[in-house]
Image (cartoon, rainbow, N blue to C red; front, side, top):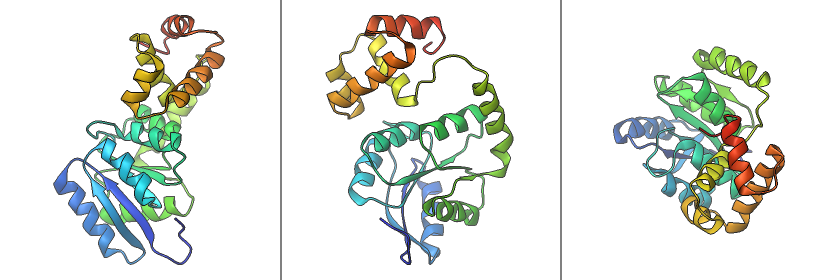
Length: 215
């Protein structure tokens, strides 16, 4: 890792082969960028990003097996230093907010020009945030809405684990489903208990349903 004088190392995960190839071609044409890998599904993206350690992973939101947000949270749980740029066909403010809250450092819509996408990759690699101009208003509206929302703030991963808990799954089962360690699942659950101000699973699920944190 490191972008000093070296080229920025990039991994692309998108399940639309033709679109992905266009992005890959644009990256290869940029002298400051280096493509280190590509794939079309979420679980493979997590494994390869952990192995290759690119500076930036470019993620579609709608990946098979694991969504873009799930990939971001899985990499964060694993302590990956790779920064994430979401490249999505969807510009809904709530989705942009969720991706940002999960840890994305940028969000660009798929109708952006290839040069803009490459500029966004470079910006994210250098520690900046980058968002398409057309999503700023929607993101700002979501930030304002969440500021006035007094429900407990659970992360995407915490909500995901709590939802599986609500289905009656054990910590080891959840760990297998999400490719986490059992101790990581238990840590997330403990964080949920603290945020919801409860002491066990049943109370956490009940309160989350009552307050609209789970649906």
